Image (cartoon, rainbow, N blue to C red; front, side, top):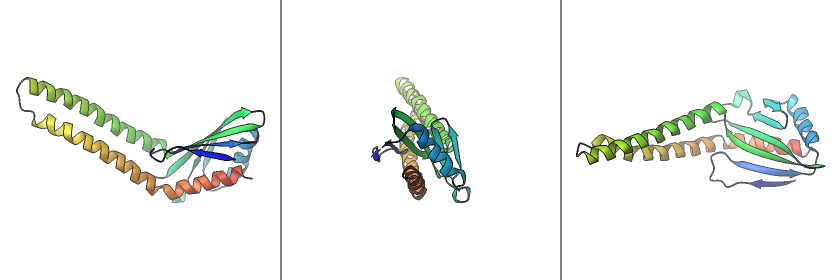
Length: 165
């Protein structure tokens, strides 16, 4: 088993694991191991989603998304992605989208008001404030990632224990 991790910069860490086992055998191992487990899980073909136990769940709780891909005859690759629940991720991306669009709108407004020699205080303040808000959102994401880091480690250990069976 060989695990490759991506850079730590990302809010949603990714990894790949090369296995010397058949795709179907790996998926079956996960189904059998997670059946009587506290970790809620869902399966769809080679896709596996593992959540933290309900009693330990909080807003920043991570979710482990795995995809088991056929590589060769008796080899497979497990691609993993840690991230927040889809609802949290969608909310976070929506806020980023609103901030980005607002920045563009206030940037155009600033240019127009400056060109017409009108008061530029509001658009100027927003063009300064919105990038600061973006940076704040990034650090909130980092804080959320560190808050759920122990749970990420628990999900990773669970996955490794299943693979090594």
